[in-house]
Length: 217
Image (cartoon, rainbow, N blue to C red; front, side):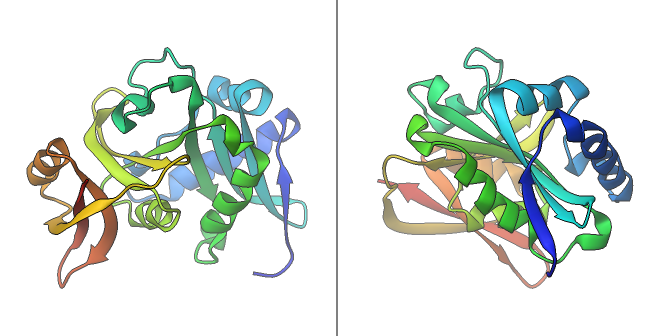
């Protein structure tokens, strides 16, 4: 896509960020796919504990993506699901928004690559995120970045979410075994995750989407 510029966002763009988030939510057939950020959460990212990168066409904000350094004491910390020893060294990939008119140009992926360049990864051991099952675009995005499913559980007051994590200090090794489970089969996915399996890939079957699970050595 031509004529797109990228800029780290600040409180000066708050009104544009909120408007874009609302537009994206209104455009979704299933609004529960996106966990919107409150004004206070956006302020926390922009001012104190994270970064947000915006994509612009001319003066118009058409997409943005955020990273957050979460409070290590927060409830339901994703680092616990990932097995992190020091929760202060866990970074979250937070929400991303793409204007409905600019979907299909890979902006979510490009922002994901660029926003990671704005933080010192030496300060972190894990990058984590959550995605709702069947949010295919976001699932593809996370797997493309080398992130893996480490849990499938309720978060944010009872909403079912995949928990993704990527190790930044070491490489995960797997035994020669893999299992393909339809995404809608929540019970089997949770069973194999509890047995030490990790979701490594999203595939499309004849009539469904499935996740490939492999067991960690």
